[in-house]
Image 1 (cartoon, rainbow over the protein chains, first blue to last red):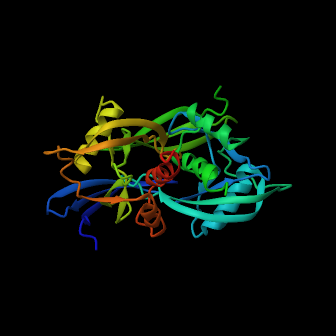
Image 2: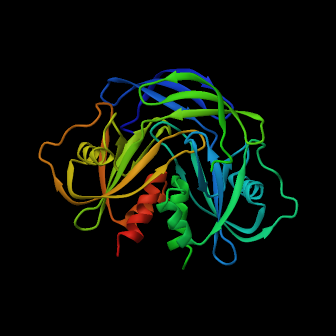
Image 3: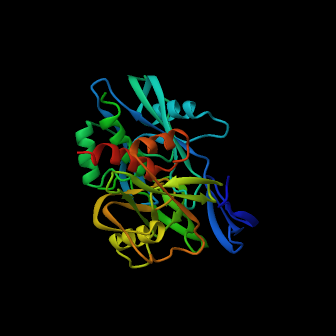
Length: 181
Length: 181
């Protein structure tokens, strides 16, 4: 099956952090040669495409230290240990947008950076939204602003670079073509 | 402008690797509180959606140590220092598929994991493909198999989980809807 599998010869833990950890593995390649692999471990995340009754997408604007700038994304968050993705989806939607959703549908999961990280995002569509009166607050170190846009407006935010991440780029194409059936 | 900006108080280098590096920053949040940010630095990458004359997508199958499995992706690779994205696009296409392309069109750039990494992928469509007689070989630690599929076949590979990364998920939606005009 895995004729290209890389067998781990040794593994060295470099860092164990709050969110990610880093290790460096020595691996044996299919041709018998050795190589190093720098590998980031991440707990995984869930993202939702929240669609309002009038067909708008609910997005969140937040500063991303890794990019040193503010970008606009679909709501997303890390899974807590043992948390089912659907539970994370609803929790993050409430924390980040104040919305609940009567209809939450799984779309697809994907790895974000398979070259160096194991992060996987599970993607959902959230429909039949309703405002939650006293929504749970999210992480105390997150500062977020809500943005509700049509698909056409979202596409302009891609062109202007304000939408700038893979999951949201996917979400907009998906909302444009797959949800308008 | 950046009212949510997080000001760096101190920055500690944890690891300087061959491909990625890791640092941990102490930042001051907009409310004055402090937080830690674990940040992976990556040189950036380019990916292409290669479309054959009969409308198939050229994909590459490779083992990804970070995921511990073989997945099918659009051709992609890291930018070398000072290399323009379009040059990377053509180089990686040749190295990974043996194809040259007379028409290479920029689509979009996106960050893959803005929560913890600065990796950005620049995405291109490669058309008018031709086989290169003695193609440049790629990284000596890469073992790759070519797969040419229709969009419908690609969608089945998503369902079966063999296609499992964000850039390829985006590429398939793009090829399905935006290229069939």
